[in-house]
Amino acid sequence: MPAEPSAPTSGGRTPTVIRVLVLATFVVILNETIMINAIPRLMADLAVTERSAQWVSTAFMLTMAAVIPTTGWFLQRVSTRQAYAVAMGVFLVGTALSAVAPSFAVLLLGRIIQAGGTAVMMPLLMTTLMTVVHEHDRGRVMGNVTLAISVAPAMGPVISGLVLQVGSWRWLFVLVLPITGVVTWLGLRQLENVGEPQMGAIDWASVLLAAFGFGGLVFGLSRFESDNLTSPALIVAAGVALIAGFVLRQLRMQRTGNPLLDLRVLRAGTYTKALVLMSVAFMTMLGSMILLPLYLQNLRELSPLATGMLVMPGGFAMGLLGPTVGRLFDRFGGRWLVIPGSIGIAAALAGFTQISMSMPYWQLIALHIVLMVSLAATFTPVFTLGLGALPQHLYSHGSSMLGTLQQVAAAFGTALVVTVMSARSTTLVDGGADPVSADLDGMRLAFFVSAALALVVIAMAVLLPSRATAPEEADEPDTTPVELVKS
Image (cartoon, rainbow, N blue to C red; front, side, top):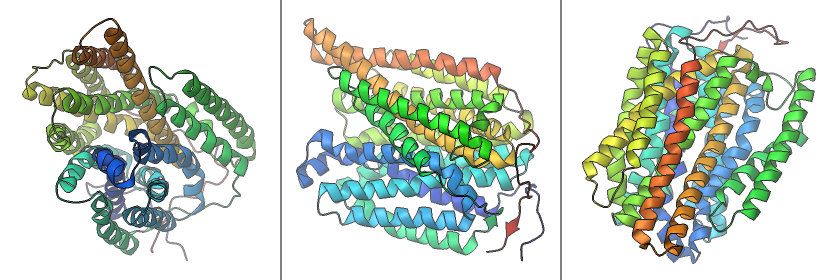
C-alpha cells in the first residue's frame, strides 16, 4: 500500500536517495574520460591504429547521445530502484566485459554497454533531485551534484595516468568493478522509490530516429578534420534530418500524451535560455579539455600523468566550490552568480589565447582554475533555474534534453577546436612556417574561437532571471502527487 503523499524535503539535509545517486553518478561519469591516456597502450596491446583506438572514447560519447533521449520516457515508466538497478547493472556488465576483452572489438562493445548504463544515471539523478528537494534547498543540493559531474571527468585522466604508470590498461576496469559493486549494493539497500511509474507503450520509430539522429550527429562531428570536411558534413546533415523527423514525430505524439521526449519543455523560456547557455558553456569547457592536453603533451612535452596533475587543481576547485555556489544561489538567486561566472569563462579563454612555449606553468594553472571556478558559478544556478522552470511531470524530459545536448555540445566543441587548430596549422606549414610555431598559432586561434563563443554565454546569462517559478501542472493528464514509497 503506498505511503501518504509527501512534499519535497527541506531543512538543510541532503536526502539519502540523492547522496546515493551522486556517488553512483560520480563512479560512472569517471569512466567517460578514464581511457584518454590509455590510447598508446591500446595501440600496442591490441594492434590497432590511433584513429581506431580513439573509438573507446568516441563510442562512449556516441552511445550517450543515442540513449539519453529515451531516458525521459524510461524514467516515467519504471520505479527509482528499477532505473538504478538497470543503470548500474548494465554498467557493471560493460565494465567486466572491458576488463577481460580479448580483442579491440570486444573492448569497444564493453565501452558501449558501459555508456548505456551511464546515460540513465545523470537524468535519474536530476529528475529525482528536482522531485524530492524543496525549491529553497535545490541550489545547495545541486552544488553537491556539481561536485560529482565536474570532478569526475577531471579525475579520469589523473587516475588513468597513475594506474598506467604501474599496470595494464585492464586495471582501469578491474579497479572500478568492486567500487561499482559496493555502490550498487548500497544503493539498492537504501534507495526509496520516488513517485509512481506511469503506463505507456514505447514508440520504436521515435527510438530509432533519436538513436540514428543524435548518434549520427555526434559521429559526424567527431570525424571532422581540416583535410576531411565533406563526408563528415554529409553525416551531420543526415543526422540533422533524422533529428528533424524525430522532432516532428514528438510534436505529433504530444497530442496523444505519450511522446518519447516531450518538447513542451521548450515552452518554458527560462529553461530554453538555460539550455542554450549550458550547451555553449559545455562546448567551451570540452574544447579547452581537448586543447590543453594537446598543448602540454605535444608542444611542452609533458607526460600524461604530469598533464593530469597540472589540470587537477582546476577540477578540484570547480567541484569543491559547487556546494558553496549552491548555498549562495539559494540565498541570493542566480543572476549575480551566472553573470560574473560567464564573464570569467570568457576572460579565462581569452587568457589562453596568449599561450607560448615559455608561458609559466603557474599561469596556466591559474587560468584553468579561473575557468573551472567560473563554470562552477555558472552550471549550478543554470541547471537549477532551468529545471526549476518546468512543471514536475516534465522533469525527466527536461533532464533528458539537457543530457542529450551536453553530448552534442561536447562533440561540436571538440570538432570545432580541432578543425580550427588543424586548418590554421596546416595553412601556416604550407606557407613555410615552423611546425611547432604553426601548431601553437593554431591552438591560439582555437582558444580565440572558444572565447568568442563565450560571449553567447554572457548574453544568455543577462537574460536569465534570479529565480524560476514552475507553471501549474495544467498540461499533465495525471496529477498524482509525488510519493516516497518504502523499498
